[in-house]
Length: 87
Image (cartoon, one colour):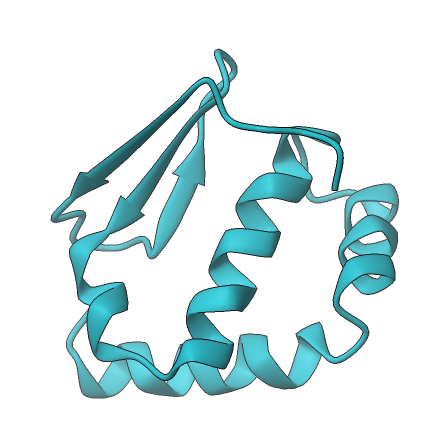
């Protein structure tokens, strides 16, 4: 994607799979180890796209679709997985 985070942090967030700070730190939930690899890949791609577009406006979703055309299906599957893991 042409961008790399400044730092990667693993934590036990209660309500998020991941986040990206304005300083370029990507934080990932340790529970991602429990999800299928394709859903893990979605979270990584989502957070890396935030290094390009730090919002959820249409340009962010276009960038995510460019690198992961099936992101919508993965997003829904991850939402379902989160409900089962009490995230």
